Image 1 (cartoon, rainbow, N blue to C red):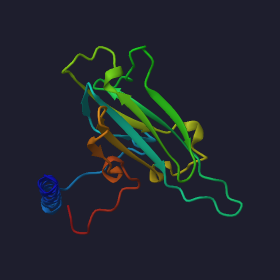
Image 2 (tube, one colour):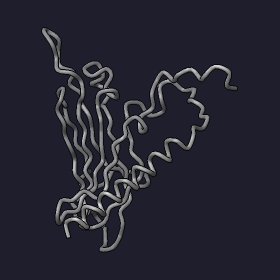
Image 3 (cartoon, one colour):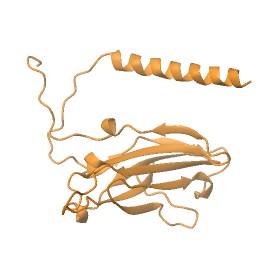
Image 4 (cartoon, rainbow, N blue to C red):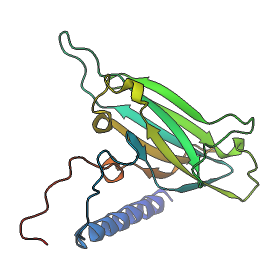
Length: 191
């Protein structure tokens, strides 16, 4: 029984690795960088739309990867706000009507998380799927304390089952989620 389960898990992992390899090797497409500086929504990392249903919880995690201070330098404390947004871009509310959002002051090497349990949402009926997205922002008042926050704050999103705590979905690829500035020069000879 354990051998069969191990074989199934190994097969799934090999299949996922093959799909990722094909996607990477498939080729590159030409893209154009935006002309606007700064980006339209500064100091924000957003994930794509995901869905949860009763019996599931979505968790957004963040970690401050700034190195610890050395000598007389001050620690690079980054203030981040974790928020869940619905499909229309409105803040998600719990059954009591309060916005599900939390602010953290992250010291170097520290992490934090915010959970959204589908069982605690307003108007979610059994069998319904609630669509949402996650946003990680930095309030502008803190910009001098953590000047390169988007390079040091690494977010991830996880969905797990409430009954057994098993993860059913995990998304963590900040390089694809964040824009980078300045944009690199195009390769020579491309028009």
